[in-house]
Amino acid sequence: MDKPAKEWTAIVLTSRTLEDGEAIKSELLTYQKKGFIHQSCIVLVVEDPVSSTSSGVGSGTATINALFYVVEQLSARRGYHVLSADVLIDSNILVLHHGRSYPFGNPLGAFTLLPGHISPSKDYVEITTNILHLYNFATTKLLPLFGSGFWVCSTDMIIDYDQDAFVEPSTDSSTGETDACIITVPAEPFYASKHGVVLTGQNGLVQDLLYRAPESTLQSFTQEGNELQLISGIVYMSVGVSERLLALQRFPAIESCTYLSTDVGSEPHSVSFFFDMLLAMSDGIREEDFMKRGSNITKGDGGASGDASKAMGTNVRRIIWNKMRHFRLSSFHIPFARHIYLSTDLSASEYLNIMKSLGDPQSSHSVCFRLLCRSHFVHCAAN
Image (spheres, rainbow, N blue to C red):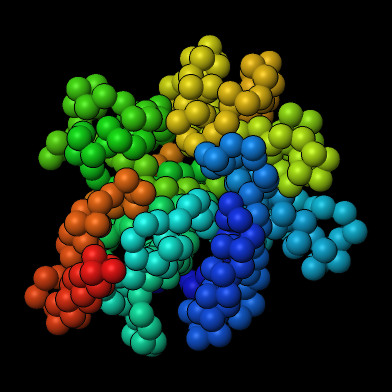
């Protein structure tokens, strides 16, 4: 049964610098003019709260800030004189996190070039970039499966998947009614040990989230084919969860996660989106375990929890636990998919091999793409 077409109400691009954000926004507006993005969609860019550390503010802080900003903008456009969570009720909001630049390819990692057949379009001819691929994937494959809500998507990875083998939830699936859902892809323990893994229970709910767990530990959780459910970097949150997340900014400790902290000159507190916020919703986590794990995990998510007082960090995590705990977190697994992390630690040859591995090696477009990649790196080496 075909699902009705759905469109994004707003796309919010977050960036560490306003300069990078505006550059990406201009490209998104070009996509909109060409018809890839619906004309009614609002395209916004928001700079992450300014942090004194080079590692940034953390994915959770960037997400809270983006949600606060887009609701503020939608409220004003719909005639509200104050910020109103009512604008979330019938909205589909996509947040694209752009975290950093890359040494190879386009300096803005979101615009890493991909073979054209990775994200085919019957109606348009366009050079395929990673951000266009992720947008197309979220819009055509994921958005129709869920109700109105707030989506978070990293641009630090490539999701290479078999479109013909894409499996939608069964007819008795409740994806449209879930509170929050993590999109996962398969990965073997060695690769998963460098990233995050979802553990689910027999009730279908997420029991735990493991971050950079040792390969030996992950072996005991493998499923058929020696695979695990890897966190893809894409998450759906229902209107109810989004409203509660927005309400968190009323607490002074959480308010520091928004641009308001910059306005008053305070240091934004670092929060991990996955391993603080979503971990609190996991069915198998207890409060004592959550409070112990939070501070260590946040550091691993690029945060600066060490710069804030221990008391502040404990207060933030306790607020998150108390307010987000009752929500149910599920996962939607996409088989026949591959997660490719765009690490800044990749060598030129490693990056080239990844780009060459994408898609059908017999495709004429792929052959031309690989030759283009090789020519690019030979030129760089010569200079």
